[in-house]
Image (cartoon, rainbow, N blue to C red):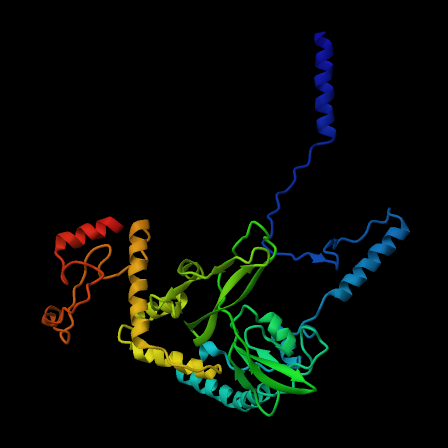
Length: 398
């Protein structure tokens, strides 16, 4: 056994003497950067030549790819910058200067120039809008249009106008003749043998009321009553009639009462309800007084009188009647908001904490003591309340 191991060791030494191992020399890597080429599909193109043991068809394909890649590589002369490319495109809509780079004076000058260019077109369009030739009615399409409604934005014949505006108080114009003529709600246009004429008829006040009769609920008719009423709205003064409902079966009738007027968002100007106001008008006047405390009541009513004339109506609005209705409405609104807990008016100087108190020097306090009059104030108490009372009142509504 030992002799066999000795023979193996001798054979191994003999083999090492005949074929000594060669030591590889260490080569330092160069720091040069090489760029890899890619074809039009994004694949890396090999820089080593193809081996000879490959098939001839594969070598041809590789050669074709290399030649195509060489053709796809752009030269510096073929590269065009993006700015030069955009500059070569013709601009069909030339852009003006950037508004953000303009000063305020330049923007104002440019705005005035734009208005000066548009002004002649606006004058021509205004003249064309007053034309009286509008063709056929836009509802029936068979009769000549004689009325233009500003709210409905359409032109109507006389019959379609009666049907459409039976319960509406729209602003209308007669568009026959040489010029447009404003019409009040109680004016209609009738056509007799091709001639148009303006006639008056009774116009009813729009009211939210529909009584039910147990004998014939479907036989209820509405007709005008003998009581006239004056309605004051944002477009001025209207002369109307109160409606009444009558059953065709039992001939029982229902009159419009104060409860029906309040439900329809009207407010009485007198106890007999000869004059009523739209709640929207009173609310608008209150908002105007809060935003501009120096506005005059007479100036506001004068504006309403002018709107009355503009829309073809007549009549004046009483200032005392309006003042009384406005005060009563403010008192009712304040009382309701106090009971329901909804604050309808919030003063920034008083709520949530008192910040300022001011007394007008032109309205002396002694004038309120000397001119008590016979009418009782709606709100009891002193003109200047104590701090404890104001604090308790603020806590009540907070």
